[in-house]
Length: 142
Image 1 (cartoon, rainbow, N blue to C red):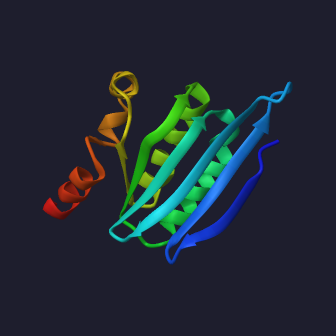
Image 2: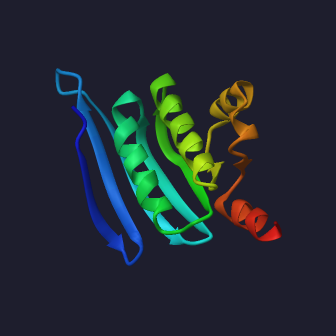
């Protein structure tokens, strides 16, 4: 069973940790941190993005979206593992954002995961950027 805890880390930030034990002392863990201010809120992801992280990740996205941002940047720089369950969670966030007239942006993906996201067609709905600065620049250019 996944557990979500949240606490303030900055005036506009919050953190959450999802943990799901798999026995023998092994656990899947994703830590998220929300920072920034509209029009761009950043979700820093650290750890493993798996099935165990689906609901906590969605809840963290909702916290970020509630800040009124028109753009939410998912920063994968701290992610060391991403599987199909994690990708399903990302697709859910992209879908939820589209329904709310928000745009999801991506950064920090490894070359391998960039190729996976492009092959799946996700970048048509959530464009990738080389950096947070590049994403912010693109937002201000529109």
